[in-house]
Image (cartoon, rainbow, N blue to C red; front, side):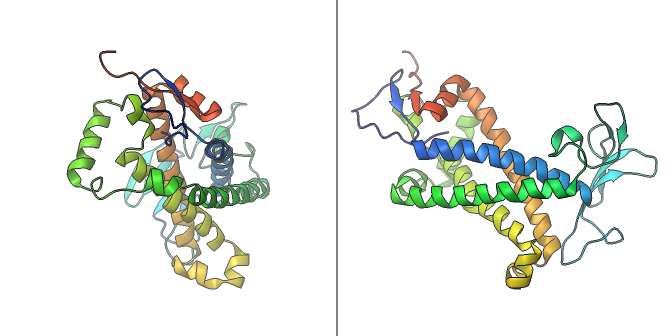
Length: 281
């Protein structure tokens, strides 16, 4: 949930208030929250314009889609993934807006920006915050290399790669046994894997696949689109990466709540974190 603080005090213990997050980390965290929420909600509106996903270069209504959100012949909402179809009336495909009018769009009005259907406005919001996300990530990675955060806090040691070590951390998390004292300032193996996956896989993938869908990129550097097997494949990977980030966000919030939301959120706002007390103290 956090990086080792800059404080050099000798052996802080449970109950002590210590510095946990640098200003750069806190700024990047909250910029990401805003950018990703806006991009997700505007992206869902863009998806509403054609609520199907394909593999390859081309995709149109008659083509076989691997994912589709819409309504069936009985007027019921449905989500289809491959050969599996789930009814989603009232949530996806068919839902009722705030004025009581039944709508037939993939995602409901409360989940999209803008709330009323507008592909043009959604694209403006999406592109504007895509630049925010991309530049924030670039600056954060550069600064994290300069100050040693990646080497010091995200580097996975040989011992941590051992299956026994990973399985031990999995069991500790499943039992809700969180580190106490100064150990709470260090990333465990599951946190390192999750944060590295977001920093070096999901965020870069969502940025590059977004570029691969751009007609401008396709015209200037067609190899970017070709590297993903076509624009529709890039669109599918873009969608999957976005929901990978949603999954990370949900797990992150659950862990924050379980670990103590006031202490965790305070540390991400002010930088100060109170070390959890050891058992028996």
